[in-house]
Length: 150
Image (cartoon, rainbow, N blue to C red):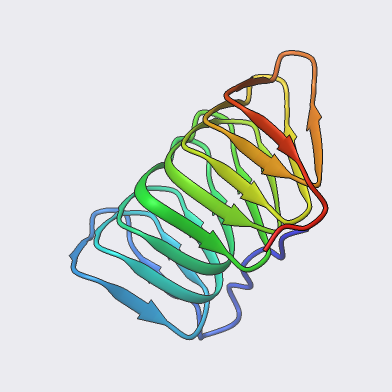
């Protein structure tokens, strides 16, 4: 599914824990957010969020780590998204596949699979090819299964 960050790769951009960036950020590599970004991010690589992000997202893949908070109007990932336990993601999501252990408030449009694990919650409509909801997972919205998605 998602490749994890290679810390030996000097191209990874890091926003450290006590840092705040106000404004948009674009990087041609992976981005790890431990602090806070107030603005849109455009990442050609993996976006990994431990801290807070208030802005729209364009990335190759995205991980909302445990305890992270993402507030966005739109989140677009070329491939996959992983939403960890105790993370909160607000915004409409478009991706290839998504696995949810945390909370999403917004619509999800996935070309392939949406997996909602036990404790995972989606408050919004889901449109995908395959939907898997484990016992204890919640989808509160309209569900559409389709093979012809963007």
